[in-house]
Amino acid sequence: MTEAMKITLSTQPADARWGEKATYSINNDGITLHLNGADDLG
Image: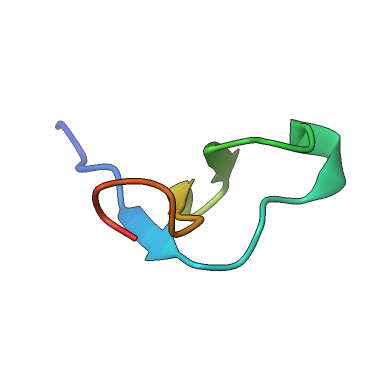
C-alpha cells in the first residue's frame, strides 16, 4: 500500500542541523517547507 507524505508550510526557520538557509526539513511526520518571505509563497 502506498502512503502519502505529509507536506507542511512553515514561517519558522529549519533546525540548525539542516543548515542556516535550509528551505526544507524532513521528520517522522513528513517534510516541512520553510518560507522566509523572500520566496513566491511567503
